[in-house]
Structure formats: C-alpha cells, structure tokens
Length: 521
Image 1: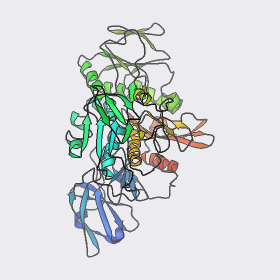
Image 2: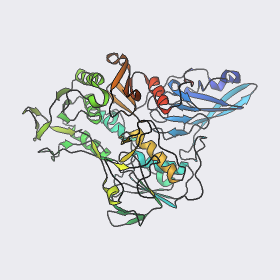
Image 3: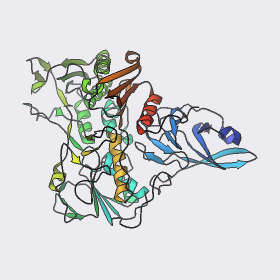
Image 4: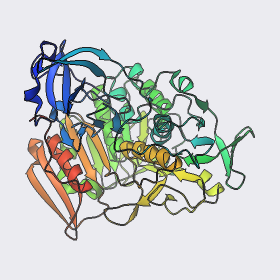
C-alpha cells in the first residue's frame, strides 16, 4: 500500500536561501528524514510533507499545474499554498511544517497536523452561499461517493444536519484494496477503514446502518426498512453497484463467492484456509486482480471467460495479451472462449463440457448499478440514473454520484456511466458543492489504476470505442503509452511504467496545456 520514500534535496532545518526557491514550483528537501516540499508565494513560504496522503506516493515525481501538485501514482491533487487535498483519491491534507524566514533564508521546523475536514481554503473553490442552503442533507450510500460528499459538505463550511444511510456498517473502507493487497494478505486490517470509528460522530455526521426501502420525492423523505422516515432538504443517491450473479446451476452454494464488500472479501479469505483449487468466472479487472492476489497466497487459480483475449474491449488485444501472459507466467491457467455451465460441490463444468476441479468459485463477471431506490423516487433512469452536468437528477433536490450516475461526458458529448473509485469520490465531492449552490459542472477526466503482480496499469480518460490506437514504447518491456482515438479525438491513454506521462495526458485532456512545471525539476 505504501513504500518507504527516499528523500531528495537539502536538510531544510539548516535553511535554504530564498533565492533558490525562485522559479521552483515546488522545491524539495527533507526534515528529520521526511520528504518535504516548499512553495513560495510572494513573501511567504509554505512547507508541506512531500508524501501523498493516499498511498504515500512520492510527490517529487509528480506534476505541478496552476498551484496544484498531482501525485504520480493515483492522481490525487494538493493545493501548494494550503496543502489541502483538492481532488480524490486523497482525502487528508498534506501535513504542514512551521517555517521561519530570516537573513534571506527559510528554515523549516516542526510538523503541524491539520484537521482533514477543516473549512476549505483552496482558492479555486467557491465558498458556500448563505442563501438557499438546505437545512439537512441525507446521503444514501456510504461508499466512495457518499462518504466523500459528506466530508466535502463539512469542508465547505456546511453546518446543517448530515445523515449517511447504508446497511454496510463498516463503510466507508478502501474498496480497491479488497481485490489487491488485502486479499493477497499484504495489507493489515487497520489499513482498510477510510476513517477511524468515531470520525463521523466527531464531525457531526450521523450514520444509520440499515437499508433504505424507498424514497418519497414529493414528501422529501427516505423510508427505511423498519419504517422510519428520514426527512431531507437535499438528497444524494450514491447506492453504488451490486455484483452480477449469473443464473448458473449450483451458483447458490456456499463455496461460490462474489467480491464487492469487506464482508465478501473476508468470507473469501476464510474459504482459502484449506488451500482450495479456485476457479474465477470472468476476466474482469476484479477477477484478474483477485487472481493475482490469490496467487500471492499460493492458491491454485484457473480463469474461465468468454473472450479470446482478456480486456480486448477495454485495452485492445496488445495489452490484453500482455495481461494474459503475465498471469500465465505466475501460474494462472486460462480457459478462454468458454463459460461456466454448472457448478458442482467440488468442480465446474464448462460450456464445452470440460470439467475443472474447484473447491471455491469466484464470480467476477461485472456489476450492475443499484437503481431500485432511484426508480422508487420516479427519477429518470436509462442504464443508470440520468444526471445533468451538475449531477442533478430529474427530480428537484435529488443529486446522483458514483456507479449509478450516468452523466454527460464533456469530451465526447455522450452520456456515460463510469465504475471507477476515483470518479465516484470526485463526483461525491462535486455533488456536495452543488447541493450548497456552487453550480460546478462535473468535468473531471476519469482515472483508474489496476495492479496485477508487478504490472501497474494507469488508465486516463474514457474510450467506450475507438477507431485507432497509437503505441509508444514496448508493452512487453513494461514501458509504454497507448493512446486511443476516435475520429481524431483523443479519448483515453493507458500507461505502463510511465506515471508522469499519465499525469500529462490527464492535464492535456483537461485542456490545461502542458507548459507547466514538472515537480522533480
């Protein structure tokens, strides 16, 4: 999840001439062995940790644009003036250091922790208006989108009632890790919760751990499973998605698993205690990330999928073939061009009649958005809950974020639904600001990452289809950039071993231009 960081530059406790900070955005050094960055604005010098608060990525290898530094690993962004986390997946600000300027030098002293929900000071964000703000906000779904929205409401100075409704009591937690390090046994349990147990109570955010049964949009209330009614001034629907369970004979047995929630992951790990032979249905990102994690535990893994090459529709045949080969090098067997026709007590039968031993089966064939509540509220639904650029649904006072949200893509003009953790978090943050009347369109460029063994794939943009690709570098050498084009429009970029280029592609797609400083320079 994190790696030990190598510090660069001088010892900042000993002081640095102010002249050395001219034209450096930012300047990197260290304090007591910790990496620290300096950013000068006029006569002031700000000092912050140079380690991303998400997964401890090295900001010295990131990219700076318009007073914001971007992490090279998972594209979190921080304000260089305040240290605030201005874009997910990072939620916490950068720890701040006290600075002193004397005799033409800046000296950096002790670290000063910052409340992660302290009111926003980022110059690029408008403050919440005082007129028209709802007296209460109810959020259904405490996953990536819902939790990020609740926190952003407080960060924007909202003092009204906030209620998070979700039957998944441990939420929010680090869902991407469930198919990666946590499943592999490399991440301890304490890494998984996004916040400590008393965090939301301390910030005045109420939790209700039971299902929402329906929504009365006209009465502005959420009806819970036990009949309790929760009134709202504004409502955010962030109900996420649920794993698809194909109608396979034998698919309801106890050794057949899905992987979505923390409970799913813990049940799967418990089933591994006997070192079973595992068959994974589906060569999805979840399926193949799980395959890599299970191989790290020494488990026998076979993948069954209908496509001839994994990820052909998402990454193209070149990268899909690379992923398959990497898994085969690590001992995973593939039965491609086939599906599972039946599941027995200790085997599976494939569509061509092949029988494979399987004491544990993992269904990784995708997810579907949870639309029942949206439908009960009378929202317009079409392969997701339709929202405008401000993430407003078809009903006044109801906003949408996360896996259920189908929103207008500013690049292609299409209505798209994106099932990415970072997108869900950023949508939750934008929806929160718009609930407060800030009228900010959601135009964030989609981003996700996948880690399978030592192969890390970064994907920027959204290409549901393309008519040509351009490959720079050698995928087999784990060093490449693949660009996906449609009608001479760049729709997406995938990089392997080129984190900086993934950041540059993101900036390019945002239309910010690339004439900005590289952090390491």
